[in-house]
Amino acid sequence: MHIGLLRHGIAEPERDSDYERALTPEGHQDLERVLDVLQGWSWRPGAVLHSPLVRTTETAWHVHARWPEVPLVPTDALALGFFDAILQAAARHPDPILVGHEPTMGNLTARLMGAPSGAIRFERGSFALLEVDRLPTSRPARLLLYLAPQAVPLARTAPVS
Image (cartoon, rainbow, N blue to C red):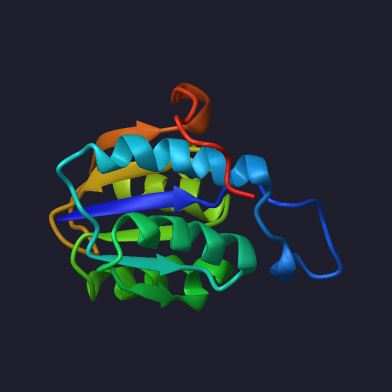
């Protein structure tokens, strides 16, 4: 089984409500660059579980645009950082991508890989693909791919506005 972890792209500065912060044009562009590379891999997601906040919902829609057959599943646990609930939700879907926030994405990756909390930090718009035996996993996950927008060539298309 594979599990993808994707941190939302660059978002607007603080607003009255953290829930309402949307992606910036740069955040949209970074996600497209990362997804261009990911789409070239043979792996395909089976579901996109995402935090219900605006920036993660927008990020999930970028994934859905690449794989329209893949369902979007809002998951409150991704906004709240409840690891056990996140893994239970992910276990109900084949090869899920989890779209969330930092430090949850980094700490969840560390937990899956058997590393200490805080050992892994996700940059905005970054993606990791892990191989696990099952969820919850009984042994450390294997990192197959890590993509950060800064390491991906510029997109061939204009940024999304």
